[in-house]
Length: 501
Image (cartoon, rainbow, N blue to C red; front, side, top):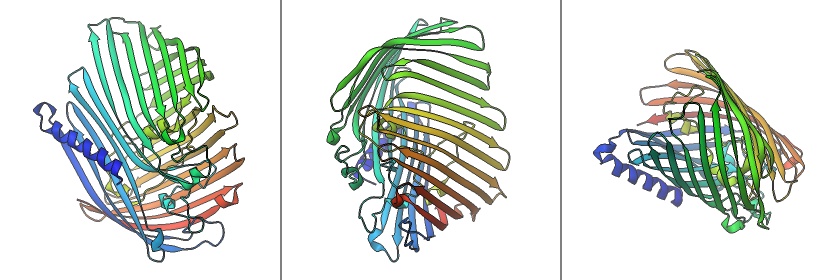
């Protein structure tokens, strides 16, 4: 783990140790260390179109999961490290690390709260570069000696928050988000002088305050919201400030329908020329809840970057769940990296996912993200998801469309449309099988390229004992692109043993 990650994790655990010693913060702890040993074979080690080269390699993946649950403290930390050792290519031995940590602490009952977060993971750098679902491509290219379109991201920060209720009349909430994101030194990024040394990196100082009505109003609601998001790009020199003040209101027409709206002013400053975008802004919408299991909300309006719209839908039955959402907003890459979640801790039905040390065995690289940039951009995201579960089966399917349009250059656009899904079947108490799939088509206007990516991986898992599990998996990846350097096909097989202490 890098020095930054060690400092963050050490500080997080130190704070938890102090909390655990306080009687008012008694916490139930769960610590699950693990070690995974894997042997793999790939028929295309360097993911090349021609002259594909096969190779065996061994992976050592230590990791741990920590959970802390108490009346005033919640902690979730997951860490895994994958060291890949090549028999015939010792010069490309590499280690990939993944960390996700979240802490929520109530310092003063009902008033003062402190949240902390941190993550470490490899990420795609450019949408015009090679796309792969395998973190193994973090290693150097044997010919060109640069990172293959990946960068090591480290992100961490704290979110203090204070709240005060004024009887049943109103409630005040004020807080901040102070954090930092680094993306490492990448030759691919340095090849473009507009990127600087750290693409999408930045230090953020976000401030927010809101005053809203209390529970004494049965049908009507009101509020005043202030938000200021400052990002300092450091090496890239691209600083930005997004600031807004809104009044919001709502009215409950009946048990099923509520109308909402907000009106205010935005004062934004971004891009190299520090050009300002400011002026009045507004949104109107509503929330429709025909039943406790179904909800639909939608809004339309005018913000600083133009007309905007959004919606959020969810429906949940006993064995089936359906979700969908669409958002439009001004964002930065550092904001998106801070919000990135490596894996979900709840399933499609909102139930906690049990700790599974076996997931440390194969560190995949999420491809459902766009390229990093130091520009402020308009982000448009559409996601839909379906989940289904029975006693022995679990199925999920997600479809998404992502788009980011640069504000410094309207032609700097990138979008991706894709789907990913998984299916698991419990054959017996010891044995399970499953399948994961991924498809994406990506377009980048600046390079005039289109890339299609396919991934398929069936697997079989068997529990050898109370602490030992085994996995055998096959994966197929295929990429086609207008850029012939991004074209390849790979078949690989992995066998692993995981011991959970």
